[in-house]
Length: 432
Ligand code: HAM
Image (cartoon, rainbow, N blue to C red; front, side, top):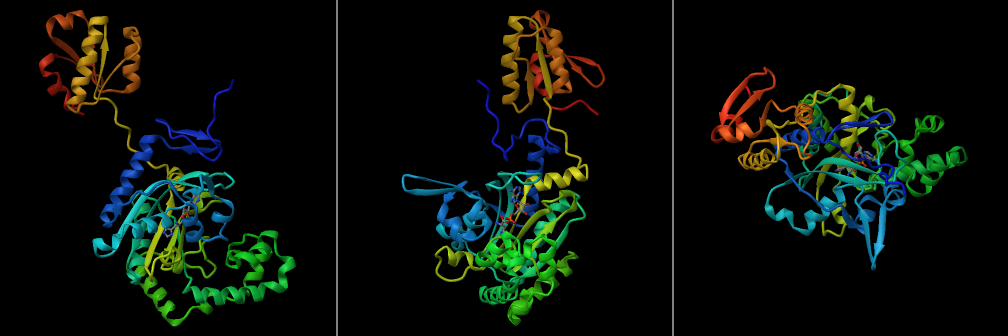
């Protein structure tokens, strides 16, 4: 019987980095480092962490993200069990909004500034940078309609990539206005495209009926040419929406954040209004989006909330961040190694080492030993592999003396240390 393999479009995160095809899967300590930097950036932007379940009611995603979006119509991992419909969350904005409403987070006072890091699931065709289980980090700022909220969301997103020294990302922004502006634009777009229906690809023909704005995302060259003369969203938004958009652009400029205005940017989720944006990087290839987001004042009402709830956020793919970091040969800090490795000669020494290693660990010292009962030579090989700066060999003589020779690996120097003083001695690394 053959053993099992991971499910296509998912991957394991291992202690060492490895590759699948030509994609490097970062090591667990590299993930940990990236998450630590992310949390640091989020905290200094005055955001608090929220963790929501990976399982949500299917209806939440269907209503939140939109029935006719690709995510809901084609990409949900959803199932039914005893009359309840569950979905593995494809994104985290609708879940965070659900949690906000369910727990009345507005009662904490002020604006709720939340961030998250966690897995999402979409049944997409896997390729480089596109997975079925991937990881998002993101921000949701709930309770403020001021354009500074939109600019602060974007500034936080940019700060993340700056913290890693990543340059060359392109920010595209647009305004989607209010839902009624979008509806008027949708009608105008359908009127414009309908005479060309037969020239459109099958996907665009379908979208013309279900979700015409998504046609603006087309990569088909003759469709793009057709769209150059199409009505634009900007012609359909009112003065108030334009004023909001102008304010966001001015605020971004005041922070020195460069952006391109893209009147074709609509985003693939239904809940947006006003500001929409995407961050791209050429290092990513076909899946060029590092992150995306926007304002979503209509989401809470769509989920049954009585009255408007202004909100803005972004989400970013962790795997795409790793791809971008690979492109700049990002220098990850080395993983923590044990401070000390104990080798034991004989059963009595093994028992002493076992107890001592656990005593040292209880005192906060990262200590290692061999669990295989191997020869001294093999134990020393293991000590080298684990790269501990100190090694100690314990045999009958050491047990009789109550003292050990602690070897500093970098210099080869040996120091006699009594068993009582071991923890003290090992609590600091050797001088560099
Ligand atoms: P999204 O554009 O669908 O937006 O996803 C955000 C990011 O998640 C993408 O830019 C990409 O980096 C990453 N991503 C999406 N799908 C995959 C995949 N299959 N494999 C790897 N990475 C992927 C949202 O999810 C919105 N919730 C963003 C938002 C937050 N809007 C407001 N607040």
